[in-house]
Image 1: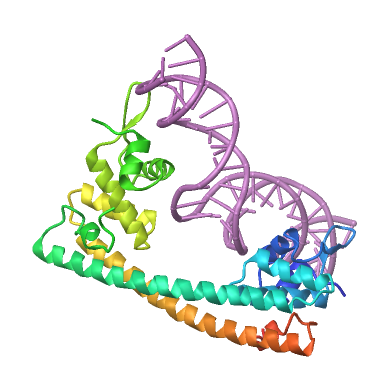
Image 2: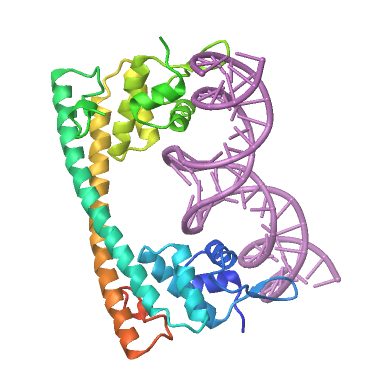
Length: 138
Length: 138
DNA sequence: CCTTGACCTTACCCTAAGGGCAAGGTTCTA
DNA sequence: TAGAACCTTGCCCTTAGGGTAAGGTCAAGG
C-alpha cells in the first residue's frame, strides 16, 4: 500500500515538491518506484517526513536534519548529535535575539531622527538616518 | 577626480562586487565610464554607498533602499517613506523576537526530551523530538 | 473504447545578496 | 617592457523550495 508523493506529502503536511527535494538531498532514501516511475512511500516514510517538518520548525537546516537521519539509519543513536545541534540552535537564537534587540534600538533611534527631520523639513541626507545611526562614522 | 569601483567601495566600507550589484539594481544611477569602460565614482556616490550600507545594517532590503533613494532623487522628501519602512521593520522585528522566544522554548523542551531519551537509551523515534515538540500531532 | 481531469515525471528559471572564479582588457610601477 | 594590480563581463554557487512547462499515467464516466 504505497503512497504517491502527493498522498505522502499531504499525510505529512508538506508539499510534494519538498518531498522530492528532500529525497534528492538524501534525507529520505531513494523511494521505490512503480513500473511507470511513480514514487511509492510507506507509512514509515511519512513518519520521517513528519520528523523533517518538525525539525525544520525548530530551525534546523536540511543538512543538519540529514545528519541526524543518517546517524539513525546507521543504527547509531543520534541523541548526542541531536542535543548538540539543538544546543547550537539555542546559542544561535540567543545571539540573534541580542542582535535583534540592538537592531531594534537602532531602528527606533533612526525613526525618531527621521521624524525630527521630517518636522524640520530636512531631507538632504535622507532624514539623517546615516548620522543618527549608531556606528555612522565608518 | 573619479574613483574606481575598488576605491569607492573601500571608501564606503563595502565590496566592489556589492557596488556593481547595487548599481545594476538601480540603487545608484549608472556610473560614468572612462574610455576604457572603467566606472567613475564621485564623493557623492560614496555618500550614497555609505547610506546603503547603513540602511542595510538596519535590516532594510535593497528594494526598500532603492525606494528611498528613488524618492530622494525625484526631489521628494523620503522621510515619510523612511519612517514607514522603519516602522515596518520594527514591527517585523517584534514579530521575529516573539517567534524566536517561542522557538527557544520549543528547543529547550526538545533538548530536554532528547537528553532524557539518551539517558534511557531510547532512540527509535529520534529522541522523541517529534513527540515532545509543541504541535507534534499533525 | 476513449476522453477528461487529476495525478505523476523531469527540467528549467526564480527568489536575496552577493562570493568566487575565469578570461580578458587596462593602468601603474619597477 | 614585463608584471602586478587593477578593471570588465559572465557564469556558477549558496537556502529551501515555488512556479511553470512539456509530457506520461491512472481512474472515472460517457
